[in-house]
Image (cartoon, rainbow, N blue to C red; front, side, top):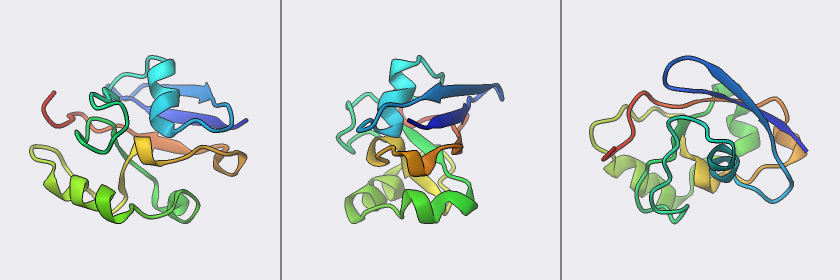
Length: 110
């Protein structure tokens, strides 16, 4: 298990404990974290689970895959950073214990 902290759009921190096999998005949805809407259910189709990964964690979370990168590039009305990821594409493991992610103030289409 790993503890993951989400910095919600209002600036408050929410720490959640994951179970092996969950994604960052599933953990957020299961714990009612504000700002993760996941309208497509994790299919890389909407971008409403967009998060910012701290630069020091990018090696552990890995880079966005090709399809994920296409989705991120298509997002309109939100700030996409070099460390932007779709939380539905990050598989949680003990290696990510202590990860802190920032949720953008706005998600696309929401």
